[in-house]
Length: 506
Image: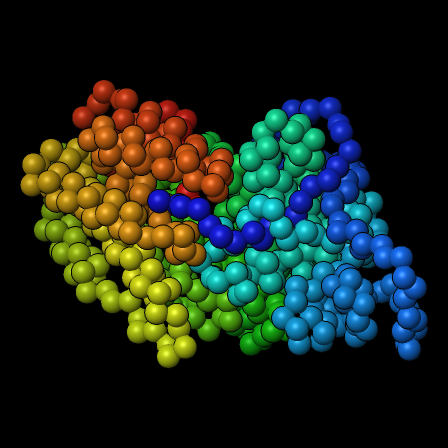
């Protein structure tokens, strides 16, 4: 259950001057316009160690325009961005100084808010690797987003806010980190208002950059433990940017560069993952959380042509794409109840049987010859847990707002037991990233006090210590304390949402 991880990669480590605590900025509508806010912050840097013996002068002119990695290694840099030849050859993370004010791609909203030219430190807190199932060396949060942030002020602020909210929760007594995080978040929100307000319909490069910022901001809202559903505001804004980008790609066959195409593929998969896992309650509308399932969400194989495919779904996209179908069945069944149809209609039963067959017949793709057998075994365990979570969701969807049939409840309990057993068997692994969804499905249906305590205890004891996990535990405990027959399963989560307690899934 989200056990400890051996990795030690982070987007950023804050090193800021003491500042008085400030109230967090209100969650606001990005469609509003407001004046920009200028903030100057610094972040940590690795100071080169001084040595007493004289250094030999290199046989090429010294420059200060190369990447930080080459300068630290005292190697000549060819200054190719976002990753120089030396870093590619040595499999190093290529780190660049931030541009001077006005040189970033988003130079209108925050010209003077560039952070210092010290590099982002990838150490201490494993924020990046915890956000994807991809291996660390192929994790786009580290290999793609961070390099782009060095040339994009608004993206840099969003990355700093994302990493900051994780670090702030781990060091909840350090008001300096909290203040810095809130300030970065404020800069991003104000900057997005300005940029979206002036966005031209044919500026696909700027549209893509803003989409990436919005996707990172979605992760910020989730990791910060927001239980009000603020993320759906960002998802709606993201969708408005996705459609013109897909239209441009369809009409022109390209987005200007392979890097742009990779950025779009990454954004589409992250958007789909967040949307799918956060719309798994059988209501479909209400509370500002209405969602639209585009074709690339309901058929995730449409994303397979992008180089970043598998960042979140791994090889389990065939299971993930069934969640929206079950959600639609749940909404259909509730509509039947409102029409005073006591039992599921024949059409609903047919949909149920079709989805049940697809869940049962899904098979994890065969590994490639060079794949790690242990990693493949862990992928299989996580996939089975996800399969059992889908079975719980499907059974609850057909039952409607009240699961009273003893046979159905017994089947659900057997699925819960299977998920718990798998969670005990799955060691520290990148596949734990997708374990939260089946655990929440199981938790929403738990009636055994021992199982409940074990679930929230293991989640809270995890070294990850991410605020949204604690928020989920709190909502589950509220669900368990609710004296109502309908406060059970995914529909019970919907009742919690109506009370103002939404579950932030990531």
